[in-house]
Amino acid sequence: MVGTQLMHQFFQQKAYDYVIAVGRRKLTLKHAKLVQVVVDFDNLEEVNLEERLRDKDIGGLNHSLINLLQKGDYTMHAYCALGTTIKAAGSKEMFSKIDHDYVVEFANWTRRLGASKFLYVSAIGANAKSSIFYNKVKGWVEDDLKKVPFEYLGIFQPSILMGNRKESRLAEDVGKVVMRLVTAVGIYRKYRPIYDYQVAKAMVHFAMENREEPIETISSIEMHRLKL
Image (tube, rainbow, N blue to C red; front, side, top):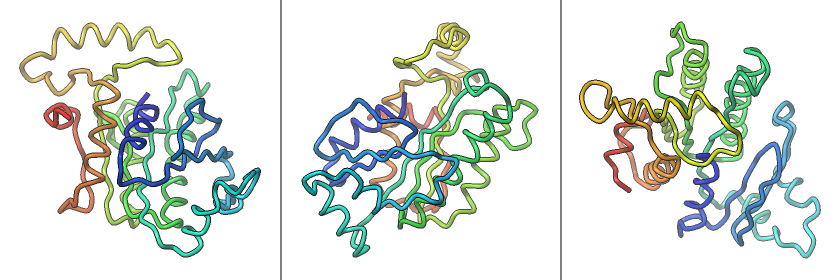
């Protein structure tokens, strides 16, 4: 959800000349800025981006981008909205592999490419010491991302996400209705559901700013307050 909204934000952002989408499958989106790279995240460390860009580059459409990468004359921001559910992954082990291992490896891979900033979609309640497995894994990810030497790391912790999912999550849909009723005021306000586009806009907003702190955790309520 957030990944799709990020794409739309990137296309509108004049500061980004190219948008390199790295994913497990090809997107249906098309745009002049968009360059797609399909990868196997189990072997991401072996992926040579320049070689991938040359593959099937009919007409030399990626020539200018390849030249930039070769010269190192660019500024790169990396965003990660990779995630799944235990049900979709099939087991806790696979969930951890996708939500933790793939994310951390992607961060290291982009840092080696020269990414200066990394913006990551985590979740409210992320805590490596949590008794809830989902929150614990998200906490592990956050802790390990902090070890990667980016100039800036933005960790975004949205509450329940609203938007159009490709797959149905009944429990989450019910949760949205309930949480919207109980989070209007009071101590539960931080759990107020948030739209996918609000998260995406917040991520780009923080990436474009010169932040004083090298590592920031942005809460769902902070994203609501931005009113972007």
